[in-house]
Length: 268
Image 1 (cartoon, helix red, strand yellow):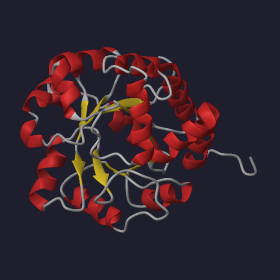
Image 2: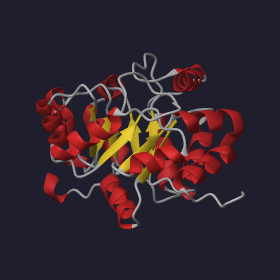
Image 3: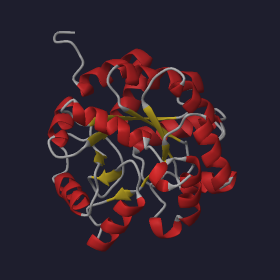
């Protein structure tokens, strides 16, 4: 299909949040942790408690961007036998039960090994919105551009405090849905304070033409969400949710999502 005909699911989710006067909440969990069905149940609980976009990570043996909490979860999923093709079962299981846009976050190697067109087709068939690709740059993404246009999928690329104006502009132009703004030079993990670089990365993305810029890395509290939401279009939370799932199961994940989204009842 023509790229102008594609209706971005993640863009639509962010715009619905914007219409309500709030940033979109993007919630991450690794697929297969602690097992496939629990990943699905936890993702649905996040959606029912205010998550606009669900980000499902494919466990990977060499996760260059992930901090210790997410690494431990993905190592466990792999040790328990998780296979890349099961991510489509996870996506389908979530999209059949809620309206949240579901993006898959993956390093590029698993997509290449399955076949870019095959991966894109199966993701679209499962109801997925698209891919977040932390180690793929637009310059090397010709095959993904073609497949994502063919199957109507979002392509979310990353920008960072180190991105040059030229790189920022090229990445914004290549992205569909939103641009993922990395707030720190480092790996994922909950932090006490949001990096001061986050606001400037978002400003640079907007200046380069990004209609939607979401901030990830280091976000763990409702206060962070409010702070980032004052200048970003969406807020991405991962490590805190993975830790909640590890320590308290599906119920704890739903509770944290409600806090992050502002839906938690006072005194609850």
